[in-house]
Image: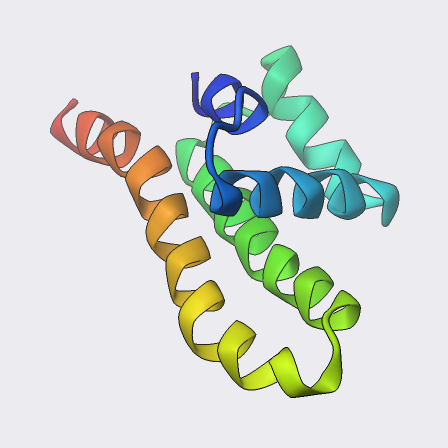
Length: 102
C-alpha cells in the first residue's frame, strides 16, 4: 500500500519522491535487488522497507538539488527537503505504527 500511495502521487512532494524512486532503481544493485526481494516475499524483514523508503526520500532530495538552479538551493534544502521527509513520514508512518503494535 505504501508503494501505491507513492505511485498514485497527488501532490508535489509525492511526485518528487516518485521521481527519486525511479532514479533510485536506476542505480541498480541493492537498490533494486532488496526492494524486489521484499515484493517477492524473499526478504521478510519489515524494517528493510522503512530503510529503503527513507533512503528513497533522501535520494529524491539529492535528485531535486541536482536539477534546480543555484539560487533555488537554499529553498530546496530547507522547505522542499523538509516537506519531502514529512510526506515520507505521513506515507510510511501508519505502517510503522501497525508493525510496531504487532
